[in-house]
Length: 96
Image 1 (cartoon, rainbow, N blue to C red):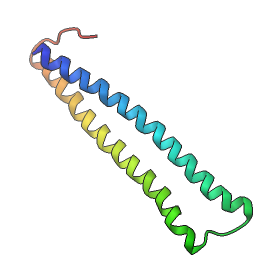
Image 2 (tube, rainbow, N blue to C red):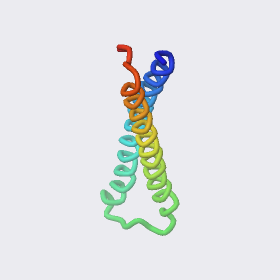
Image 3 (cartoon, rainbow, N blue to C red):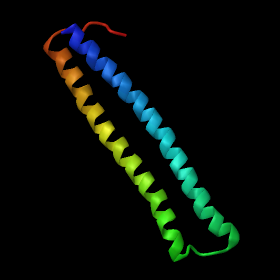
């Protein structure tokens, strides 16, 4: 049981790192989007039809990263419940 719990704790730590990496990517994506839109605002120009592919690429990047983040948070929560349930069935060793 301890080995399985250790593996679950290692997976939780990996998920935490991946979530931190996704958060950095999301901040970068938002900053890139703000810069893209800001260029138009600074020039006083509306976004033209030809700019839509770039605009949509920025939006799609943000949405994709957020979806990945949400899915990973859901998987992490499920694993945390499994760890918690395992500790209710039998005493959990102190791992950390």
